[in-house]
Length: 115
Image (tube, rainbow, N blue to C red):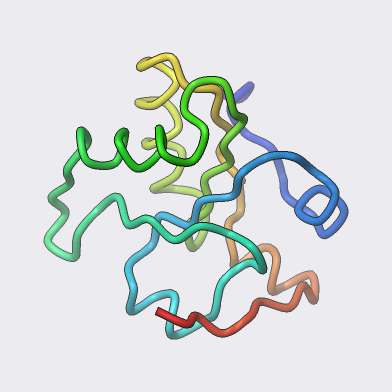
């Protein structure tokens, strides 16, 4: 599983062809903001449920299995699960370990979420 984990930094986020997908909830995006340029696609609902088929369809619209996709959440816990699942489905994915909390602790500025 460690090969799925990468530790994001400003350089990687701003100079990579990776599509960054924030899988948190809309409430979380509103609380902290989001990584500039990221795509916001919730995976887990507030009650813990999820729509894996709908999520894969959204990832296909972002480049599918040909594009490198990096998942980010609050700390990297949810994205570790999602990255493992998506890797098993044949997607080229990474878990952006440490999540937005790591980025904020390092002074990285998130931008307001604009629904």
